[in-house]
Image 1 (cartoon, helix red, strand yellow):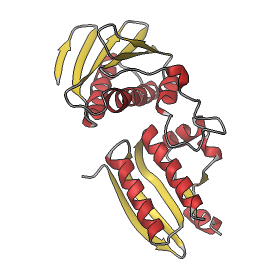
Image 2 (image 1 turned 30 degrees about the vertical axis):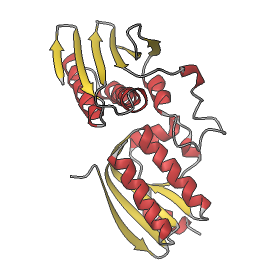
Image 3 (image 1 turned 90 degrees about the horizontal axis):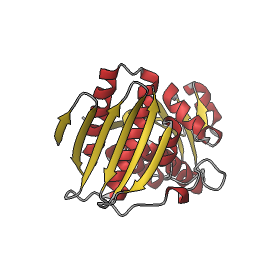
Image 4 (image 1 turned 60 degrees about the horizontal axis):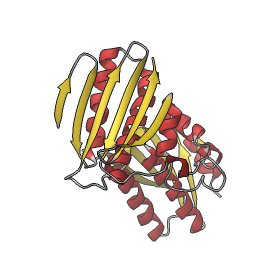
Length: 115
Length: 141
């Protein structure tokens, strides 16, 4: 089984990536980078990452979230995060990245927040 | 992987590949389980070990399979001590920028050492006289 499985669904203009597994150095980080790059190439710039089933993330995975955020912003898009586990929320708090990312607990609210 | 266990110390050696990170974390988890270390402490120690071994494998040994990473685990009634040794050319930890400042917060790298320092009570690096770099991390029990 892959370290990180990513399922894609389209809700209006927003692409939701449901992620399941680990975002860590190597396979997991590469899978996220590849998915984001492909969406941008397809012109999909409103992206919501559903992290409910991401059980583990390391500094490389957090770096990949940051890279995704900056590359989507550079293209005039938006990246938002949904359903952080408590541990991921803690890691984003201590790294002060909770002040950078737009984070939601409700998919409905997250979808509505995209302009 | 070779394994030597005594009552107080475990030493393991890993080739420099990404899989070593999971293998080292599993060994540390087993050690912590034997010590009865609780989940909250174990989460942070696991994170710190993964970051230290990642640094050793990727930045120290540059994924050279001919080079090994050595992991040493030691406990006393007061502390759990973890040392990770690589065969790389070393670095100056004081030159690693704070990833939480405004100018660094959007940088994709530089959070591994931050996590190690955050989750452990003491972290220090030393150049090994035989070559390579060692990081020693202590968690008070």
